Amino acid sequence: MLTTILALWGALLSSIAVGWNLYRDLSEKGKLRVTCYVGCTIEGGKLDPNKYLVWNVTNIGRISILVKSIGGKNKDDTAFFIKESCLPKMLKPGEYIIESVADFSVLSENLKSLNAYDSLGREFKASRKQVEQLKKDYERGKMDVVAN
Image (cartoon, rainbow, N blue to C red; front, side, top):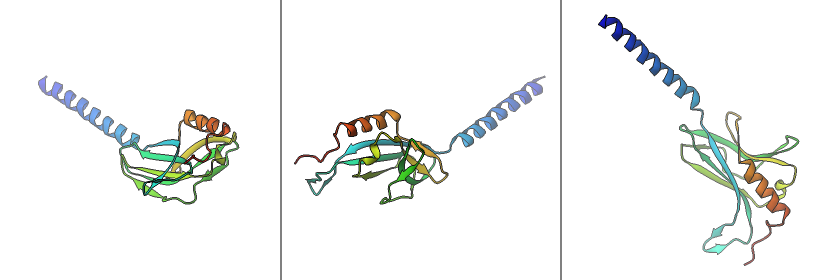
């Protein structure tokens, strides 16, 4: 009787361990957080008078992920990408990259999303709230040159 109980207990524990390992291995695919905002740069203690549309892409997953490109999509599903960038780049967990452009024309009413793309073709989007706020600010003319 004791042998049967121990055998059942061992079978239950090993089944749980196998299930957990399968879940962990299948769910760890890497994940990027995309944050977009308007920012300025300071170089050598001097403020650059221009504002930039900035993408901050952070690896929030547990495995390394190759960021292939950064850009966005319009409502008609046409995509655009930042041409002058340091990409592609492998990001380890917790690492980030920052890319920017000075052209705010992408924030038109036609803009659907601001994205980062990995080497597997997956698309990671900035929050809809951020994109809508950037579009509103652009329409209100808040993307002008900073006064010195």
